[in-house]
Length: 142
Image (cartoon, rainbow, N blue to C red; front, side, top):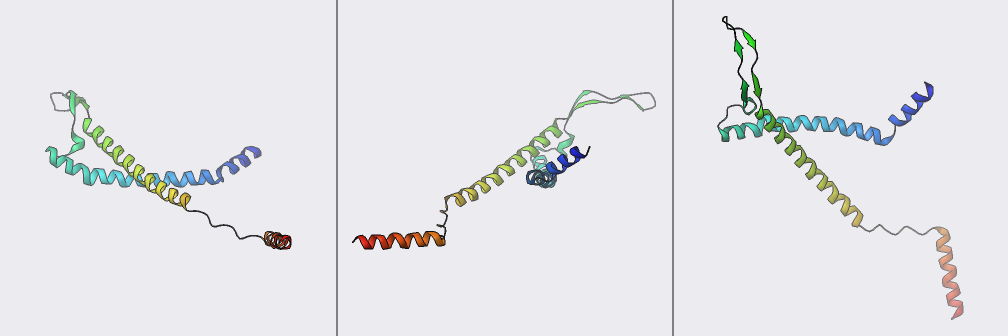
């Protein structure tokens, strides 16, 4: 059991796992923001354009609900809820587009960093001394 816990500790404390955990948390928050954008801003505009009051209520009734003589539900209606599916597709497209744009911006910054030439490193004391010796030897040969 001690080896298992030590192995798990080593795994959990690696940088990649911590980075991944942070990414999952930020991704969850980002998902909520995108869902709010879709539900509260985009879908009402689409509903206005299509004449539908509430987009998530769009459905096709496959079997109507059955009521008894007293008006109580005997069997629930079976519906094909395509409005909710369309809303989830819009969610996905916006999330995918956002991630694509973010990755593109990150890649541009990374490309600029790679293109920038690195400054030549300062020569060490030994390299300076060897350069001086080389120059002195060249002068003696002349």
